[in-house]
Image (cartoon, rainbow, N blue to C red):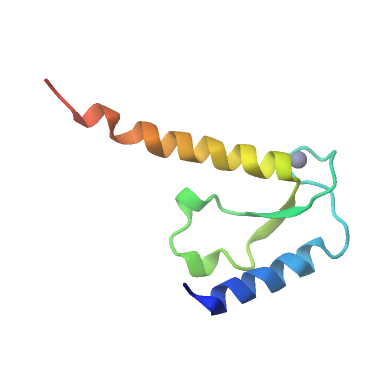
Length: 82
Ligand SMILES: [Zn+2]
């Protein structure tokens, strides 16, 4: 548990959503969450995520997250050879 990072993230997120931006992915729905850029899988360190946030609606944010989780799960499958 790192309280510092959570606090920073929350502040950055509040600042990001303060202006009532539109989701950067679909450009239709109002953004209610903060998404990470670059994607979590490509980020070299968690510290870099803060400040690299883009406004995203819940639908786009969660669908991107699900795609990443599926990718990670499917990864080690091929390591088994009979
Ligand atoms: Zn969206």
